Amino acid sequence: MALSISFPAEKLIRMGQMNDASEVLEAILRRMHDSFTYRADYLAESHERNCSGSWDCANDECIAHDMFGADVHERMICYNCGLESRQQKYTSFLHYINACSLNYAMRICPGNSFDDILKAVMMDVHRTCDPDVGGCGKSNHMSHTLSSSPYLFPVILIRSYSLDT
Image (spheres, rainbow, N blue to C red):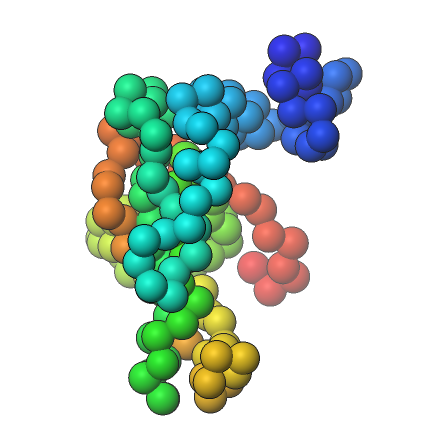
């Protein structure tokens, strides 16, 4: 009940509705983080040029950020024209990964560490070089860099409904 009251405008947690454990954990971590962070600081723009978002936490005592917060810098550097675009900074408390992609990566990379397999799955995320900012429109992989490592790294497996897997 407390979580459904905490998110009245969102449909994340609703009274009388069953939620996945990951949805409940995400709601709890977001509420904990919000309680330590001023809204203005949470929505602040990055100090880095050409990068949207922010992972600045207003309080060093934020339990959610300290224990679960992985500060991610996402960007794309086009292999064709060299344009660096689609930069974003965000804090991720949970890491969602496609179960079929993970299974496939484990089959083609037997004996590799879980870290290497996650990197292989993340390299499979592609975006086009943004023509709106002078890019060429070619498909490229997104680069994800962690600037801080959390103590706990929850991985949530999501199911894909692909017919070929």
